Length: 402
Image 1 (tube, one colour):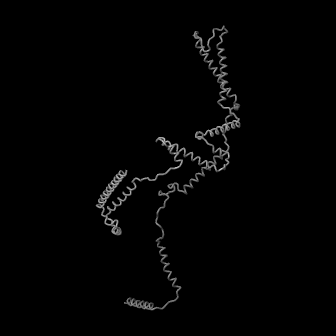
Image 2: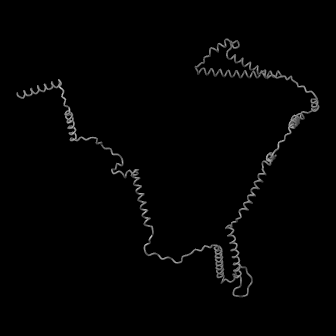
């Protein structure tokens, strides 16, 4: 057993090593392919290198060796867990109970053991559990009183009673019967239907028509001319030996049937109209036609009100058209329409008379203002100006004399 277990462990360890080697090989291929395409190379932290150098456990070992060492430790733990465990504990059964059980189970077959474990032991456990339950609850003597409603609610019902619910159906039938009896007792009116009324009238008319038809047929069956009665014939038959009067007799019978049917129709109409008590009053005398003009009272006032209403509607439409401009083309006297026509602004005019008035006003303004100023200052500029004016005047006089 242990050799076999050892073989299993070795096979499992071999599978683990193979799978790990495959994964590492695939990872190495992926890493090599990635390193060809990717130029980025991560930098290892200096602390990691320092820890590996100072550690006695990982000193001088690369990543692959460390992974293999971890895998070996894991496999060793798994091998220890898979090894069979020796159960050294053996319970000791002593006393009369053990002897009784040994006697009962002596010579027990395999099938009997299965039946005992599956059924008898379970029944014994249930019985012992019920006995313990009764023994425990026997010390409680209090019994609560349950009212009738709780007893009705707690009644045991079978599955059939709960699915069919016969009590509910009986209650519904009883309530329905009670309601029908109450309605029949309260509602005593029985209407006379029109169909029943017509049926009774029709039966009476049919009975009367049958009686009259029987009397007519008896009279037709009697011999004519007061002669002796011949042999009895059927009322539906006709003597065809007398060919000369055959057509006349056929026509006479048809007329007799038509008269009989007309009499029956009149009698039926009389019976139906017998209950109609309304009698209209028919005016036999026709009034004479008027020769003059026909005067209709209130016609003038009616026409006047109609004209006022028409005027009011017309005025309302005109106001709406003027305010809301519902028809812009109608308001446009020039064909341009009700829009603003641009024209030059007349802000000022260039009239000669107006210009002369402005110039005269400007000239009069300083003279009127200077009339109020009586102070005349004496300045050098004024004296120089007067002297220049005098010299110029003398020169001009001398030139004239020459």
